[in-house]
Amino acid sequence: MTPAPSTTVDIRDLFAKGKSTFSFEFFPPKTPEGAEELFKHIADLEKLHPTFVSVTYGAGGSTRDLTHQLVVRLNSQTALNPMPHLTCVCHDEAQIDAILQKYADAGITKILALRGDAPKNWTGEDPYKHFKYAADLVRAIKKFNASGRHPNPRGFAVAVAGFPEGHPDTPNRVAEIERMKAKVDEGADFIVTQLFFDNHDFYDYRDRCALAGITIPIVAGIMPITSLSGMKRMAELALGARYPAPLLRAMNRTNGDEAAARRVGVHWATEQCRDLLDHRVAGLHLYTLNRSTATKEIYASLGVESSLALA
Image (cartoon, rainbow, N blue to C red; front, side, top):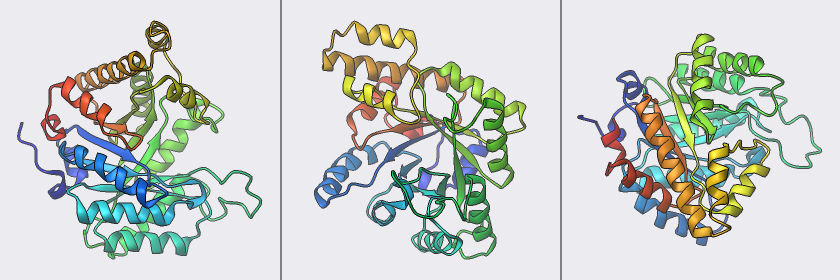
């Protein structure tokens, strides 16, 4: 294998060559102390040379400035290739255009376009007044690309979210794939899925996308379970989480021992990644929760020293 550093290769070209990507997700800390703690973990993960890293965006754009600051810092002070999240919520066309211009000026080359969650207890005007669906946001990014204002002549690569276990706000799986097809038709370049714990859900989702004529790369989102309390929190999230019976049986055998539960969770995620790579997944995207240890352990268990070895 002769992979090229991600900083010099457009991700669209990597996918076109059949290269598997390996990426991580961070969320912007709310305090200076949190930011410094995060960068300690980032220093560890930087050594793994991920293809890219994504940075989340709070409900209603609540972390807009924090997201932008973290993205710019990652781009300017590390060798990482950041991909900021951008949502429809509470943004009008002028605001989205201004955000895109900031990212273009900072040399950012990819965006994850999401519908996003409205703020809790929201009482203002319709938060989706200007951008109802992620497909509308994809269209706006592609319009910006066409304006020629990005230093890269091809503009931003655009990622969108996929839901192997189903989207909670979509009435059925047929409608879900139709909405994904709408995002692809507007110009989405690749899909990054929400977390899942049963690879059969991912393979079924990938097959249903293919049947609908969706041929863009699908990157699998993996979140290692590192504590029993974290497992419970994931189950309570709005997006939910379906835990397969074998995983539950393994967790039950830990009898509440957090260290044992962590070993089970990291092993499960590692085996997911190994199986996905064997089935030619377009990429692996690890939700790090701003920590590095589980990700490093998964790398070591997969037998690679950096994500470039996966290409």
